[in-house]
Every structure is written in structure tokens, then in C-alpha cells.
Image (cartoon, rainbow, N blue to C red):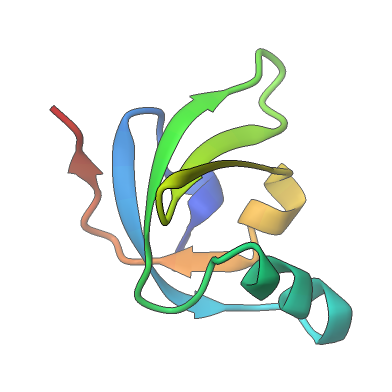
Length: 80
């Protein structure tokens, strides 16, 4: 199982499943991260936390703990 935490800078991944429960899962979904959406990893902070993403045309920062709850497809695309 690959999670968003495993995606490197410059790669795009598609969300396949969200883990977590209750308010945590709801908060992730409220940010626009739902099944089937493509996420582009723009950059990662020097110490690895947080990650800066492009989701549905806007920029979003998520913590590694939250990124670990987002399961993605294993075929990552590199943006050219």
C-alpha cells in the first residue's frame, strides 16, 4: 500500500482510498482530497513536514501524519 507520504516532489498520484475516522477523515475530505482526485506534490519542507500540494487547482499544505492516511495508486506520474 502506497500513501501520499511516499510520493516524491514533482510526482502526481491519484487517491484510491482515505483511512482514518470521524473528524480527521472529514477534514481531509473538506480540503478536497477525495477518491479519484489527482494530487501533485510541489515541495516538501526541509525537515520533511509539511508537504505542499496542488489539489483541484489550489495549493494545500498537509502534515506527514495526514498524508499517511491517504492511499494512492502506485503508478506515479512525473510532471514535465
